[in-house]
Length: 551
Image 1 (cartoon, rainbow, N blue to C red):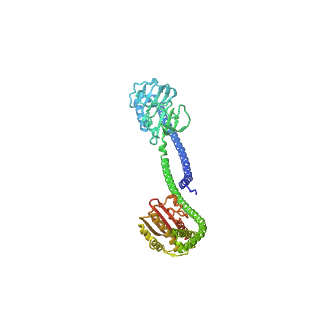
Image 2 (tube, rainbow, N blue to C red):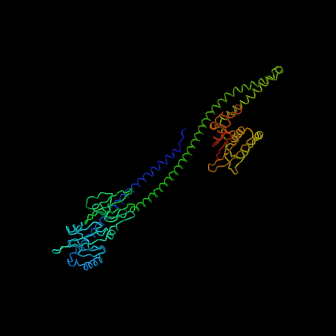
Image 3 (cartoon, rainbow, N blue to C red):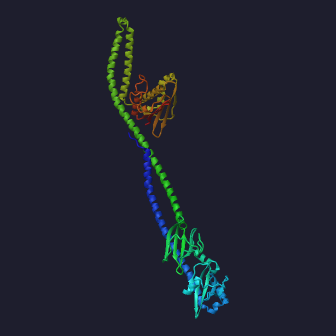
């Protein structure tokens, strides 16, 4: 009979259950994560775009205000007032009291020399006529410079306006405090890796970045910005194997490019923390599902395995019963056919025996040999008769006479029959009988026959010098009594265990057994509603267990 591969069945059930349970959960989790991450990225880029626009407007407003402030001041001063150093000093003091963005203030004539100067530097003998910014302010009227060293030999920015007054012209020039301007730009820096800086159209730094580079050094950008474009651009870029979010835009009042960089990890940290929490919860859920699946599958497969074993046992019992029934019919036929010639042989042997009582027969020289032959004929006829009698008993399947039976008492009485033979063979019969066992309704005579057969077989299996332990117990769960016969005999080979209940099968030497004892015991117990099991180890002994129902 083909048996189920329970290990493979268990594995298939677990894999299919986990697959159908976890796959939708994982797909849903990944979809939610992807959707949530995409929405958060869009929100982050929108936030950076707003920030860049806001900062560009602030810088434009700053430059516009400074330019308007100087233009208004230049318009309010006459040439004489502007060229008066004391008057310019008072104006510079008033200017600093309302706005601390300026370092110095100077009035420069058309010859490029200072008409008046208010500030910390000694620039009285400086001539700006050949400077680039001088030419630009003369040409356009106003000028905002890039960062340059100039005569101060220090990076700075100037804002200059041209004042025309009749036939006289002069330039009002102010130097912007680069530190104040730089801090104004850096206020937008965000997170641990965020940065903000300005570069001119030649990608020269106008403010010092937070990470790498100094003012007036060339800056290598991770994107192209060689031409001016309207609006603001935002892009996710990889720099040194790390993802950053860049936003950049051109300043309206100056050819400066504002660049702001953000580290998405800083902004996405709440998302990552929520994601970690979700993954931990998901892992916990998966662990619970796996543990539950394994537990339920193991329980189900164990019950299935138990049912399969019971079915196999039932099938074996049915097979054995069918075999016993068929052999019983055959045994009855064989016994009947043998009994008739045996009766004739026995009758003829008796007739010969009667003839041997005649005097003339006794005078025959071979009388003794003839008498011995007749005796052997009678002996073997009797032996054959016993065999056929047992075969008929096996085949007849007598209906049991049910009555209340004390199994312990029945077992004790049966032992007495074979106690002498056991003593002669130096076999110790030990009894461990449970107390308080309920009586059973059974056929005491047939039950005693079973016990007698099992004890007799055990003594034969031990031979000499051994132990036979008889144990009884009551199983209240299955409402049955178990009688165990454990010997220390030679044991039975595994390939013979499934044949020992077959009629005429014996492990004894030829002539020492008929092979019907266990078959008869099996048939009786089956008829009484019980069962017999056997377990044996070669060289250690055999244990037969008889289960008898209580009711």
